[in-house]
Image (tube, rainbow, N blue to C red; front, side, top):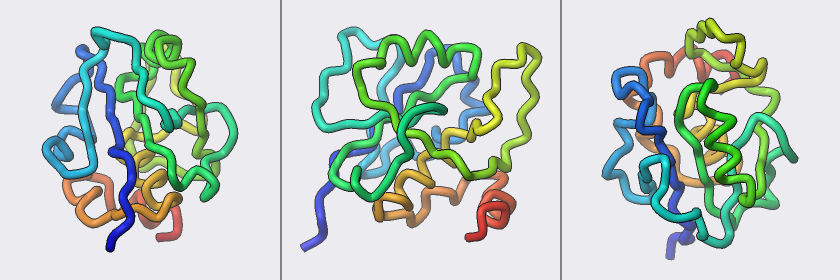
Length: 149
């Protein structure tokens, strides 16, 4: 019997450009749910951690928890994070992005990752299925290479 994990939840900002969105190809995939931001009601699912630029490092101690990923540009990240501040944050420091980022506002953190990269790292760290996660990611090979996979 395969272990059962809570679904990964991706909350997409309504203004996020779908052409630049790295996680859209995962829509309809088992084990991943999409919600649109702003939510109608406060996020109230128990047993979730939020992937964030700051906070304790995600570890195997979090293996039974669900993953919450906020998907939007860094300029909207602050507002989104405020609405989900009650969900404990976990950081993914020590990894390199392959996504070519250009921030006119200087809002990208040094340890910023593309949403698909953050999701892949979190799933890998928690020993969850990875098959097909990066299949549609344009910078897949470079991302895997940069991080020694």
